[in-house]
Length: 567
Image (tube, rainbow, N blue to C red):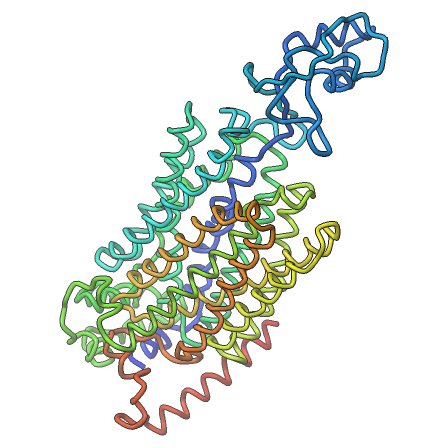
């Protein structure tokens, strides 16, 4: 049990853990804003080719110039396309006869068109200003809208690779502080971008810091939490992220300007950076990198905050060494990503997790990153997509406690696949049903994210947990980068994106059954712990001690009782 006993002696889940989790969770309210910000900063307003002197023309046709008068003249200048006006072409000569009125203007009855050589006029009903209207990312430049999101996710991917290894080497707290500062500065400076290129560079660097925040905040939480509270804390942290999605809709609706929106969701991290100095570095990590004096100091601080000053006095270096003897005597070698694949059990875990992380992120962002396609008010759609996560995550909390991590993870992915496949057979004119199924699919993929974050932290050992989280998060970012690109497959075959998203979730759901179960088991600290605990031949080679089995059963019972009380 090792460190778990030390944590229980220091007060278990006490005042320190509550404050610690709350302070680490507050920034999560804005993490959803970072990942889904492109829905609003790159929203596409209704637009049409700019008509020169349209105001004067409207005044000549009517006694007063109003927006309604201007709109009524547009069919004479803009050709019809589908059920509305063309967004990318206009008539070379005004076609007054199309208005069906006796207007004192004369034009040629030729329907020759041209591109929007003088730019576009954007309606300001849904958005006052976006990067699309700022730099005319429409028509031939329309792919640039999704490109900036792909670049952002590329930054998140790079950050996952970079910060995962750095935090295993330099510590969780140091890298978290830097990530907060980088996000606050570069995220706020994004609002000052004067070109599309500058905007993309700032978004890439901001994405890197987002990875640092997510990975290090998660590890700091889980490494200070007793075993039987991990499920509840992990799920509640995920629910905070869900609140952030609803908050994003409210903030975006109140501002409707991409520059102000960037300032609103990034500048609060200056405050987070200031109060985050209160955090305690992970004592688990300090012990495993041969810094027992610092670990002891942090454990004593935790015991005092938890109201256990007598235990703070009893905690000594000798006590630490007796509890963590095997871990502290393990070889002090620099861990790399190769260690995730070097041994049999670690290799099996890593390969399975890569598939699960990729597929979860692939399906999630395939559903969540193009809200305008549903034909519903984008702000309302964001609220619906966020609100559906509350019942999904409360449900997965019960599943994780009673069914275990493996079954819960697999069921969420398989349920997501079934809903996505079902949507293929719903006619397009039944938009309400299609939207409802898409919302359910998003709920199941969100629940899958809740499972996989907790599950991954419990599967990887402390010495390489951040590297493992970064390794898996890298595949998740690859999935989030690939998801928007696959949306264009509907031009080849309308159901093809759904087939790809659903097939990916189905495959990952099957693969998840190959992972070991971690419910109510102590966090492993070394790679050797993982190999001994979950090796396929462990039953024959190293039978478990009967007392340990009884203790695990007792912990499982306590965990279920605590979650029943919470629910």
